[in-house]
Length: 123
Picture (cartoon, rainbow, N blue to C red):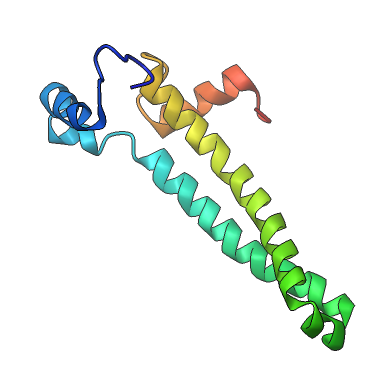
C-alpha cells in the first residue's frame, strides 16, 4: 500500500492483486531475507540475553543478584535486544529494497552485494 496506494487499496484487496498478478508463488517470493533476518534476531536475542544475565549477575554476587534479579534481567534483555535488532536490520533493508525498487535485485543472493555496493559494508 505504501508503494502504490491507487493499486493497493486495502489488505484484503492486496491479496487479490498479488494472486492475480503473481499467482500462489507470489505469496512465497522473497521470503529468504525475512527468514534469515528473524532467525539472526532470535538467536541474538536469546543468546545474548543469557550471556548478559550471567555477565551482570556474576560480578554483583549471589546476594545482590538475587535481590535485584529483575533489574539485572531487564538490563540483559535491553542490551540483547539492541544487538538482535542490529542483526535483523540489513536483512530487512534488502527485503524492502527488493520489494519496492524494481530492478534492484531478485532476492537475497544478488540483493546483498547490491546493498553493500550502494550503502557500504557498514550501511
